[in-house]
Length: 159
Image 1: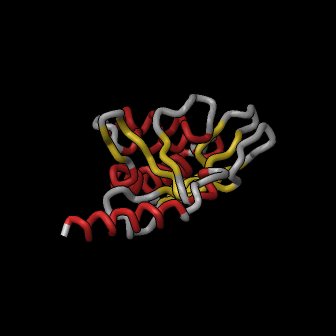
Image 2 (image 1 turned 120 degrees about the horizontal axis):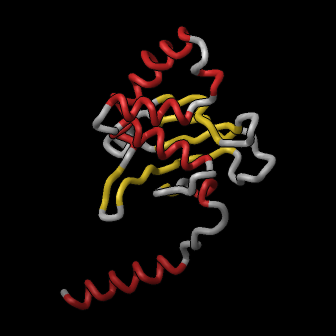
């Protein structure tokens, strides 16, 4: 019996040697985690929008969320009300499903990012994010873009 287990183990080991190692851009490989990103990156906007959605103090979370949005989304009272009743309400309800918490803190798992490389010329990025609670459920979509001052801002989020 132990000879059979050893043979099976060696067979699996030999088969794994034929599997190519992951290489290239993680965004093209099928995803990557984002944890505590730098302030001046599009990942910061994505990560902190989700964290604002799970903030215990709803007023504080809303303020954090609105700080991530560009001015044109919140200047007119009707636009601000639409933002609060639509996207913010959905974010409050679903953000926890897109954040995972482990020994190192919160993380969000990006399934796809387009474009894959961020340069100084990049104006807009589309993120597809994984639902951490129900992986087979619909993925979330987040659009982040540069404002007129070159800062990354949240254009849209659908969870």
